[in-house]
Structure formats: structure tokens, C-alpha cells
Length: 110
Image (tube, rainbow, N blue to C red; front, side, top):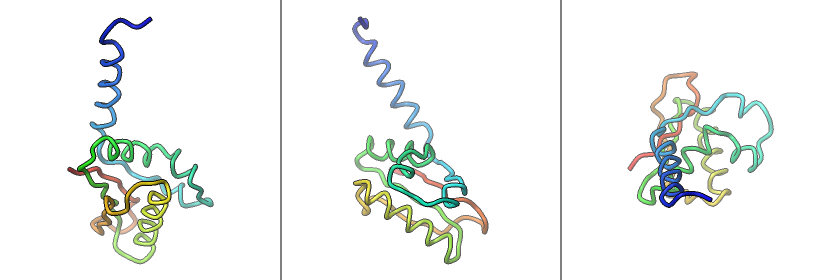
């Protein structure tokens, strides 16, 4: 049996881990194979910022990508997958601000 307050402390500890890591790089390997909703949801670099987004109702998820058609298509595909996984697409912003060849980055902003 847990002592009173232990569960709350564990929950706050888990929340602080999620809230502290706000920028995540999506590995290029994610795009090297067919994608499924379960594969996207299981990807740690996607899952963690999505959990932070859900925990912060006023926040936005920024998908940073490099300029060019292919990086933009990857960012749009990721936004579509997140929408299919019940993340409100109005909370997702695409931003073309990375150097050429950079992997997508996910950032939770207030």
C-alpha cells in the first residue's frame, strides 16, 4: 500500500518529466518504413510532446521543418497522423525554420 501523498508525488514527478522536455527531434528512420497510427503513437519523440500538449490545454504543438517540398510534406503527414490520433489539428502549427537536411522537431509552446 502506498503512503498518502506518494501517488501524488509520483504523478507530479511524471508530469515534470513530460513538461521539462519540450523539443524533440523526430528520427529520419520513422520515414524509411510504412507508417501506421500505432507506429506514430509509439515513437517516443512524438509521444512525449503529444502527452505534454494534452496536459497543457492552452498549448500548441509546433512542427519545425526545413524549407522545401519534401520536409513540408513530412510535416503535413505528421500533422495528419496526429489528427487521426484525435489531436486537434488547430493546435498544430507548421514552421519552416530549420536548416536544409534537418530532421523534423516537435516543440510544445504556450
